Length: 207
Image (cartoon, rainbow, N blue to C red):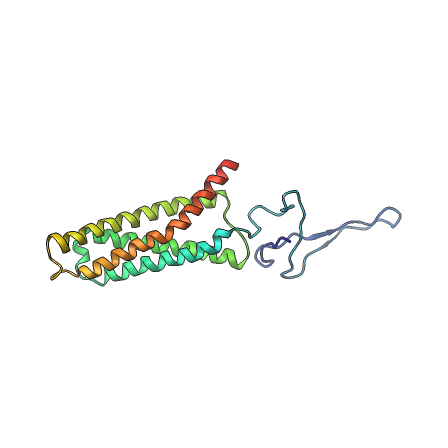
């Protein structure tokens, strides 16, 4: 039993009633659409029958990806909020870079989370070859940004606290918390990046 997309958004193909046999007269082929929300069973060599490519919802990464995307956005937003709450971050280029990288990561994760939620609602997998490649590239770019920003912020924070001993005049605790949230955001996107990369390589090999 294959469950197609929601009929309102992606209509299921109509059921074709075959004409009567010879001797019963000529009759037109009747197109009978499936009932609202009814699952359509299509048999084929691979179990997919004549289902349009990318319509059947059977992607295990979509639901897991939604959870990881929300975690990415939450940690990135936390890093952005903590860093922006300090008055000293605009004077340090690395901290400004962390704010920019966390903003990009948050926006990217929320955008992909909306797509995943839409795919779950309409029971449609949008992870075709081109979309998977775009997601993999986007994860690679945003991951590189947030990881490099977190590493730079960690280095500056260590310099201020251990070498200069300037935590009395600088909010080192806030800098450390923002850096930790940035690292957690990067770790939360690692499973989604690996899944998208594996799917992209698999689809490229099949094409």
